[in-house]
Length: 146
Image (tube, rainbow, N blue to C red; front, top):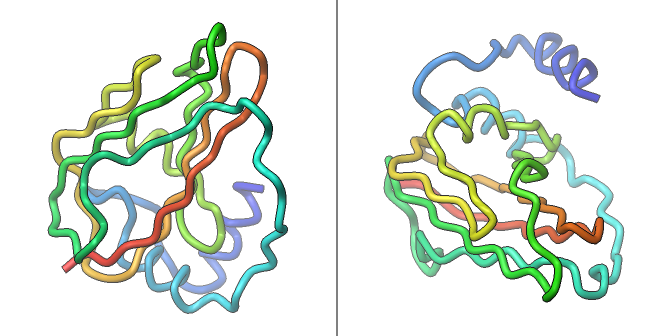
């Protein structure tokens, strides 16, 4: 899948990620200009961990750089497996987990990023985490950076 995305980005004349941003302006524009993707309507897995975004508040545009704080809420007696945490970006679901982990602290309790840099524009992040019972919880957020 990542090879397909790399080929697609390459064919669009977009460069690979390099720099302080979690995503490049080119990745953001490609995602925002992509035709609407098919999304299945599925029922969340029963008792899957919940991913709560506590910071930033998305009721208005977010400034960059910004702090990001996520809290994981597993269903007892399960625990969250921090190594299972993934972040997918935009319409193409580009895996930016390694980029985020270079500036983030991940634990069973959640994720904390002191300063995440994103280019100005519209963004979509899908976060996924698994618990010790193998249940996957996910959360998608869309927001604007000013």
